[in-house]
Length: 57
Image (cartoon, rainbow, N blue to C red):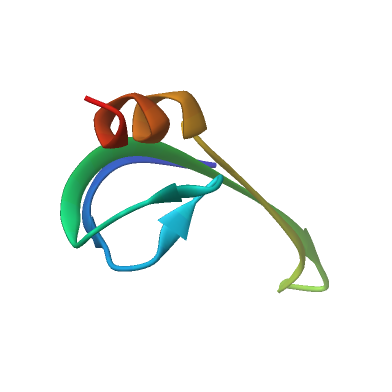
């Protein structure tokens, strides 16, 4: 499991909100399942509320 803050520039849209090339900072969490030493599944969660709040201010 890895949690990390990310700084990204949003060229497109997110949840129907236009990015207009604005920078956003948000948290993302990755959880991997392993089978036989290889990644068998990956789940990714991101803080969509934080992104939406930054794009609407």
